[in-house]
Picture 1 (cartoon, rainbow, N blue to C red):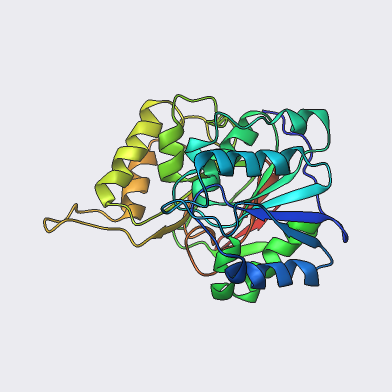
Picture 2: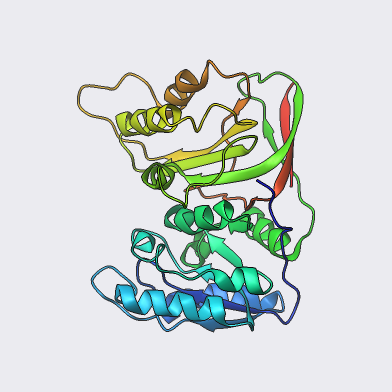
Length: 300
């Protein structure tokens, strides 16, 4: 897959915050609005902000219309999804992304449930931004916030983690795809599933039973999605659940056992996902991974 070049924001650009899944109030989003404005950006809210239809930020029709309007508005340069949960799948097959092909693409920001949108864009050769949601801002350290800012404005950044599992020395350069494992699993067989061959696959998840993690990894494997990766990058596997009779393996052991036959590196503890210090990834963007004896360095 050849991805179109990533686009970046500049001061004065407009950012729209809206809901594609669960609801969010305007008052809860004030810190995120203030942050973006401190970066010199202009912020507006979608019509879904403040709406509530059960757990959703408005009806399916309202959420679809709100997102479509933002996609089609040439003044809006980035869309930051207010929160995740469940609901984006109700919209994904009806959203018209033709504006991306006709004009300069927009930056779509979010993660978890937003993996559906990321996958759709990646399958069409567009980049997008995997980052925390506006409602999470109060819990995010400066490292997370600064990572988002640098990604949005196209500034260089390097992430370094410990080489805890003694991955052999090598240098890898390839685009990053993926997102939430549960959402990727749900996308198998659809046209929103991104190309995996010769890519760095990133996965993360939260609040899943351990046997579900193995089931999902088996499904990706049986579908041939794990065969020709350049690397597998594992972020937070947060709040995993088990039964009274233990499954016998944690998420790390499950993923290691499911990928041990492959010759690409499997790297754990990448700081992204449902964790406090969530660093931002440019999905579809090329990343260089330099694996050294004691550390692993990631440079977008």
